[in-house]
Every structure is written in C-alpha cells, then in structure tokens.
Image (cartoon, rainbow, N blue to C red):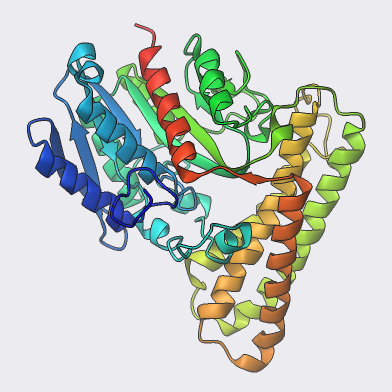
Length: 428
C-alpha cells in the first residue's frame, strides 16, 4: 500500500472504511469465491462486516480489530483474504472456508484513525490513542459468562461462532513495543518453529517473556498455551476465545509489534531482577498517581461520565498499580504464584508494561482535555502539563527499549503467516 488506493499491505494502517471498500472490491472481482454480509451493528450503529472466502466445510474465523488501538488487523485480514482467494489450495485443497470479521470494534477503531499519513511516530500514535476499558471490549463476556448485558459487538461475534463452529478462530492483536508471539487455547505442535522462521526473516524478535503469560506453559519461544480454568492468571474463561471450545475449535491470539524491542527475545538471566522489578513498580505507581490527580482536576468540569476516553483512563489509573502485585517485590504476597526465572526478556516485558499503562491514561486524558468544551482557566495548566508528559513519556519509552519501527507491510505479513501456520498445523 504505497498509495491511498491500495489498502491491503503498505506503509500505513488502513481505516475502517478502506478495509470495507477493499472487501467489497474483492467480492466484485471474485463473486464465485467471496461473499460479504453484515452480521450485526456496533453500539454507534456501524455495520459489523463478515467477508467469507471459499465454500469448504471446515470454517476458519479471523477476527480483526478486537482492540481499537491495535490497527494492523484490518491490513492482515485483507492480505489473508486476497491470498486465500488467489490460492485454491488454501480453500478447496483443505476443504476450508475462511471468514474475516473485518473489524470487531469499528466505533473504537475510528477513534484511532486521526494519525496523519506522514511517518508514523510514537508521539503521533499516542496523541490519537484510544483503547476502551475492559467492559467495553468485544471479546469479553460479562463476568457471569452469559450474554445478558453483553455488548452488541460481542453478541454478533458469538452469533458468528455459533453459526460457523470454527475449527480455528484467530484473533488479530498487536502491541506497541516488544516482540511477536501467539497465545493458543490448546497446544498446536511445531507452531513455535514456524513462527520463529518468519519472524527471523523480518527481523522481528520473538516475545520470550510476555508479562501477559508469565504463568502460561510455553512449548517454544513466542508460543503460550492457555492454562486450565482456575489456574494462576488464567482470566480468559469468560471470553470469546474459549467460547469456541464448545464446538471443538481452537483459538489463536496472534500478536505483532509496531515497534520491536530486541530485549523481548533475550532469555539470559537478568543480573538484578528484583531491583528492576521494584523500580518498575514504583514508577508505575508514581505515574498513575500523577495522572489520577489530573483526572481529579478535570472531572468536575465534564458532563456525565466524561465519555469512553475518560472511562478508559480512569480504569487504568485505578487497576494498573494493583496489577503490579503480580511481579513487584514490594507488593507480592505469599499467596501470589511464584514468579518464573526472571530473564532479561521477562523483566523487559514488565518495564514496558509499567511505562505503557500511565502513558495510555495520560494520552487519553489529553484527548479529553483537547476536545471537550471545558472552561479554559482551570484546565489550561492541566493541558499544558499533559502535553509535556505525553511527549516526554513517549520519548523515554522509545529510548529505554531502543524501539525500532516495523513497517506495516511486515507487521501484516508476520500476522498472516502466524494464522496460516496455525491452520496448517492444526491437530486433526
């Protein structure tokens, strides 16, 4: 995608409208193979579009855009859809039909689309950042695991799973800084080898110590298997990931970074892990307290609940420091599950996490302050401080982890290869 007219794979992330337009064009070119339909509506009335390619009996469901800030999924879905359309072996040769939910959260995705077409930068990304709070993310069911009170996007996704009964569901995710990895709800043998080969070609590090999966079994670098329900840090039981199990399917959550951090792949022991973890915990608590104080100054001047940006920022400052109890020696209790051996990769993942969370909260609060109709006198100083904080924290984040940009076409290609590998190696 070197121009605005080709949104499959290129230099920038395609918008919701561009992904939909490209899907419609694909259907017009190959109506014998491709279909496009609306499977639901978002909270704001946006159509939830499902692009289907092939007519086999083994259904594969690919979900793009489940997290609004993880923008590569649309490009990946288009790349995969075009590849499957062009290659009958991926369809007829495997008795497969491929189905692409083009964006699971179009409302949220549109709030991330203001990034200009100029070179993508860390600061540019965070000045237009939005990630909804957990209760407003479509892959999560309500706490009781039922559809009562579920988001319309969640209901639509569950409806698609019930209809298709997929043998494989792939959820397309992305992280800002780190390495590439995949989380699977059941083991897929030899997957680590395939992912590693592709990642090496693009010089993308394999995430060898994701803090999201410290307590998950790992059959190889970059691969994590969901532990049994009730295990330590197993918090996916009320999700659309495990919902597919009732039909015998496997879910793969594919992650690819926007910016690579080479330490994400370093499995050597960290020389001073306890000190590094304590420092990261202190930094997270201090920064969260600062942003929380700024929210307190702005909140009285906002109507209602302040909207999705403020709700998300409030959740981060409320729960972020408490989550540090999983790894911060100053907070860990005897009841906490023991930490694995702290390699440089695992410590790096924690340090990234500790910087990422308050930066997200500050960035979303800055957007609220910039766009809401607020009285200038009490808010001007808060805006000035937030502008400085977001810029300084972005620079520190990028510098601390020697973050290097991965071109969008390579992010999408790695994503696509992970999905194809999971399908190719699927047991049975």
